[in-house]
Figure 1 (cartoon, rainbow, N blue to C red):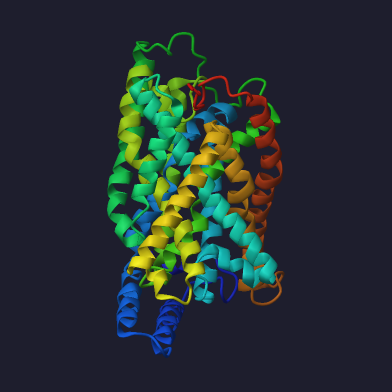
Figure 2: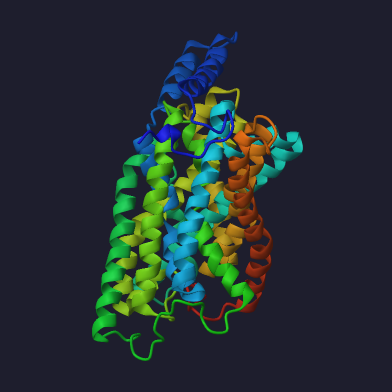
Length: 476
């Protein structure tokens, strides 16, 4: 298959990216570095730092990008899916998981196209300036930064739940959350995505093994009724659970939406690619792998456990095995979380030191400022994890406020304003316009209904007294 022609077309820009697009992206970076080198007053040491730094941050190929994207994408999202299936029912759960997966892939295609057409875009936040000028830039920056910090917070919360589950200790729960934040901080220190890709193989093996063990364990326990939770459990159902409320349905849907939130980081990853046009190959591989893993994870664990499946799903393996699978899942919890810290810190650091050699993070000042920024972002994420200690509701809030825009309703706007050539109703554009219309509607539903439902569910969960469904019980 020719990956460059596999996505829907309908405009001159909406069709496959040309080699010229990749060349333009590389030329843009080279020209920026060349301009810096030619500035008067630059020392030879600074020039060497720029040359080495530019080479260091352009080593990412599409295969490594796929690994990095899997690390960033297939993590906590998969852990909330069985609980979403239990709420929505098997039929709706499978349809939503597959459908939203393809919608997310198409939306991400638009994001990558705008990066190729406008090589000066280094991160998603930069798109706001092209759409709405300075005001749009500020809105996009706030959304982009908040999304990633909230995601890091969700990883911090999951790490704390994991440690508490593994140790079964009565130690103050804040100790576990601080430990979780410290590990996230350490893993976020390497600034280049190509370096993080090495950890990606460990990360991917971790989540596959953890989910696999959970499936096998719950399947065996379901078959022989030997588990403590097997007795009296309601069987799985193809239809939504009895008495489901609107808020519960939307929160469950948002768990699926969160699982496909990779689009927001795509321009940041493409910025380090030596051949950016190859991002389409990554989209096909990542999207396909996600859809398969998510559908199997959600459906099988729900089928084995029934209506009492918990969120995160690893808690459903029973008291003993949940400790084992959480131990197996520790790499994915922390490696995937640290990727998001790296992305947001790379954006902020590059923005602040845009015209300085410090941005390459290969000088003493570069490393000091980088480490300080990583520490600050991790602290903010830890505060969020402490403030919202409920796994499902935290994922839903993230999906409603941020993922709905960056990964769904904004990409169609990007196509209409920045990529479209000619009127949307022209024959060559009509099919693409329809696709983007569907993506936009999905995003707005998630944003509008999801925000209301998330807040309603969070308020109903107060005052956080139970450890059920991924809630971190306060012990001090």
